[in-house]
Image (cartoon, rainbow, N blue to C red; front, side, top):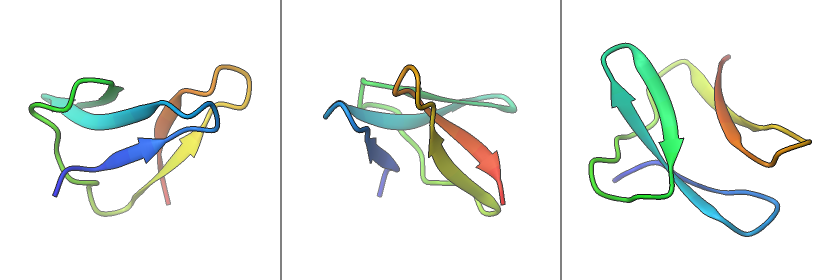
Length: 54
């Protein structure tokens, strides 16, 4: 199951990976699961989700 996140503004984002880089996109295809040891936080100013180590 792909990792999804719905931000405070109502937009849905999907987690993707390119090499060692993790990023969120609004496109669903190619989405991955949440890696172990990470959590999702939201930037309060922009509403964009980010990964943070636990």
